[in-house]
Length: 111
Length: 115
Image 1 (cartoon, rainbow over the protein chains, first blue to last red):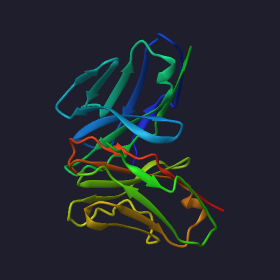
Image 2 (tube, chains in turn green, orange):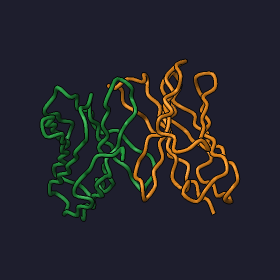
Image 3 (cartoon, rainbow over the protein chains, first blue to last red):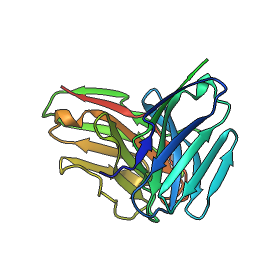
Image 4 (cartoon, each protein chain N blue to C red):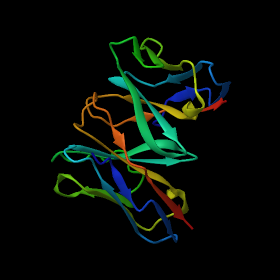
């Protein structure tokens, strides 16, 4: 399979709580990206972390990368109902841009 | 400006028929990608075009699948003799450059149903 793994597969939290999603990948990467998908259509890029970076922030998003464990995590702080969506990690293994996606985490934020 | 557009948004076809899916990338983007998303296989890379270079076809699942990109812009993904397992959402993306550090912008997808 092309894909890495994500956990949990589904996550349900209350508004205001933090949500953490984890991703593992298979071989050495160039960078890792996180995408969001609403209603099964159209992916939106959230954040990119390079292989030589360990942590990156963007608004309420925090991404970490541990290349020794071949894993990444996405933390969404102070979640909102509008954050309800599926979240995918995607890794890039070489200079070419093709993305290898994880299986995704379905996040539900209850108001 | 306009984002990536795809047509049709939905396509229902009978098993054995050929289908063509179209992608209009963002103007000026040199790289174009096709992915598909299905319940059983998740999100899979299919094919990638970068400028005038030979496309990376390593993700195409069989020789029934082909794609072309005319004039470095519009791309068409063709599936011949469709099978039920081809049912999926086909997503197109483009990026400014086909290099690892560039964000990919996705279209809304074409939902293909093979009956």
